Image 1 (tube, rainbow, N blue to C red):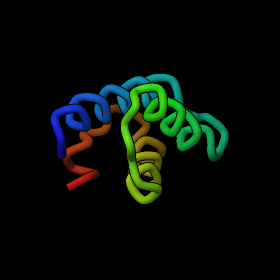
Image 2: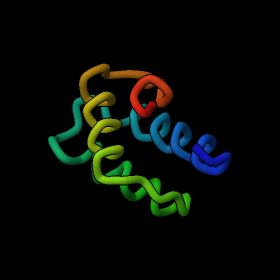
Image 3: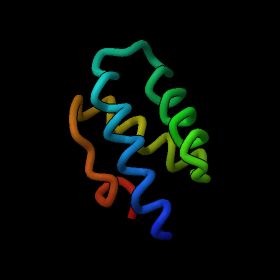
Image 4: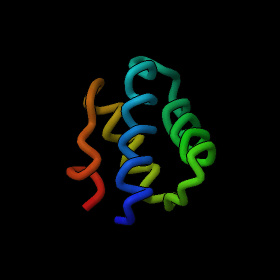
Length: 69
């Protein structure tokens, strides 16, 4: 993972997970995509899906390194 991705992905995930608990289905994924676009970081559809699932399943802090090897 590049330095930019290493910093941006966890920041977007943390921001999204902090206010998405109980959000309607699809909201977490949409917010992740918006956050990554705003940060200028390219993330694959699979990565977004994995991160969204982790946020929804764990209802809290997500360790990006555990979700995205």
